[in-house]
Image (cartoon, rainbow, N blue to C red; front, side, top):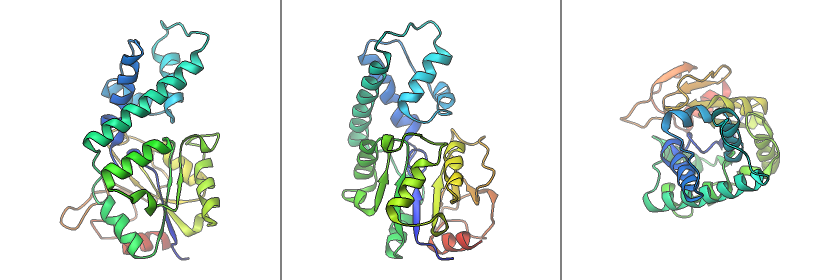
Length: 252
């Protein structure tokens, strides 16, 4: 069984975008619209149980704001707020950049040099993916990815596995040809549902998630001289993830 491709989630996996990117962008969109909604760090952690920004806003109203009376055009309002949030996120990323997580750029560079194919499978919008890659990974790096499967391109978002099935179909690959990279329980459920062996790197929001079924759970990808921490799964005796590590994990 040969490893041909790597499929990456984005938010929380490539970069810690949720707390310091998406959350303040949502809050600015709410403020601009004259709404008294405010998502602090703790509340946003709870809201991340729901994938998709529009879905997250609706969940917030249904479960945390029983005092809010939905207008007749509530769905339109949510769509407009999401568009505004995307604009604020893009401006934030372009202005200051959102650092890639440890080992990400190194591994992507090594994977390309080794001839592995790369793809993205995420619930965030294509615009968010593009701005993150261009300003945090580098100009032209979106072209490193053969397929960018993002946002509403499929009807059901993670934990449904649709986005992974879409990416595999576009690449004419089977799950057995690939490894997936995720950071959350919902993401893992999506990748496992598509039959993908999955490497998980946790973040502050996902430390207590259930990662049953993951091939390995790590603190991050690590770097030579900056080791990661293995939390669960296969112990391959190496404190950072490189192409050789991935091939061994895939065969296991």
